[in-house]
Image: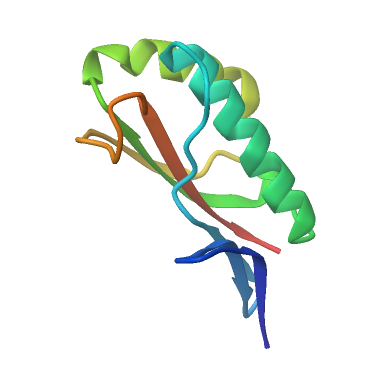
Length: 112
C-alpha cells in the first residue's frame, strides 16, 4: 500500500511505502537562509508527523543551497533542529533553485 500525503497538481508532499517516508523537496518563505531553513524544517516535521514518524527516524537528507556561502547559516538552524542522537546521512550542494527568492530546498527520507 502507498500512502500519498498532500497530493498536488504535479507531486505529493510525501509518500509512505514499505515503512519508509520520503518527502518532496521542501522550500520555505522568509527573507534569508535562516528564516527559510526554519520554515522548511517546520514543514518537514509536520509531514513526518502526518506519516506517523519523527526526525528521530531520519535516514537521509538532501539539501540544496542557492549560494554555498550560506552553508553556515543553514547549519546553525539544522543543528538546533536535528536529533543529535539519530543523525541521518546528508548531502549539501549549491544549486540553481526553481525561483530566485528560493535560497534553500531540503528533502528527507525516514523510517515510519
